[in-house]
Length: 399
Image (tube, rainbow, N blue to C red; front, top):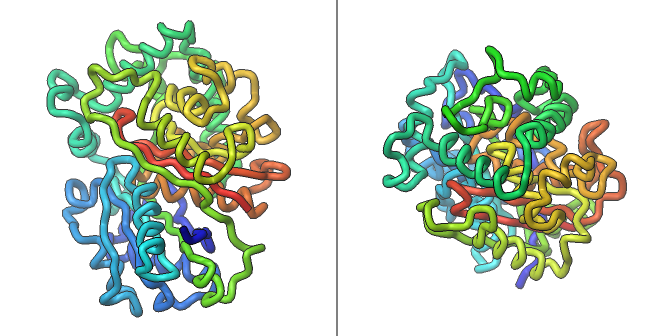
């Protein structure tokens, strides 16, 4: 198999794209990531766009055709993929597989989501309905907020199974907000959160579902944003004139999908996620012990705890404790979600998986913002999820 490298990364500030249209997003993302290495977009042989709500919220399909509108990209193999919140990770895998298949030596992966209108306002009812499409029909009945409800059930199960408290999980959100405060591209950069605020019910922090422990600060953000990477083979690096000292290798990658229906699955031991992570490690020739930077899919705070377990950094049921002991901090054993994660950085669904890889690229290249740069980064890993622990994309990156 060919070695695949991340050559460049670019993202918007996450939050609100205001009047920016979907055609403008596609063009800007591709042109901007190419400018990172002063490359002509015509050098790109192939690509993939990841998006989840482009039709339901933007009334726009075939976003790949918008990408092909960038000068130099017409008539090239470009597709749009949807894998719920794992769409960005799936876009990266799709482009990797195109390069492995010999469809080119240089490709791009672009992820985006525009979830607010031109004035930056959110239609909560419409967004909730659109996101609900990514659940099983049988599990939507009787739920007003479908995904928060389903993950509130996961949170409740995790707390009861492992003796974890609401405060334990609130500590995770507080740490991620603190990271987001140092990340200039984070949606919640200016919002500071104390533990007292995170555990106190009030106007800004309320229980989302009656009878279940999920609170506002346990939740990720409704976000506009885009992110793009350029991927290349060894031959692609030569064509671009980029040295291996200036890139990061995606040394391992895997994807797995479990049944969409949450009922009947052990979501506290997510089979697909654990399988994908194990296969990515095996491909990269590393173990969890080698990883000291990671981005995990914290759509809700319990997923940060579960994410540490999927990574193999914490034993079963010990993920919340791993965070609480400070092992996920920038100076800890493994800096996890130093970007602020989905909870503070933001969660533009199609862009999320791309942004995870992009953040790890910057960490390994020593380009992370001040206060968030891991010292001597060695190996990075990402864990991107779609649905209620249904679809998983995992990657492992090395200098």
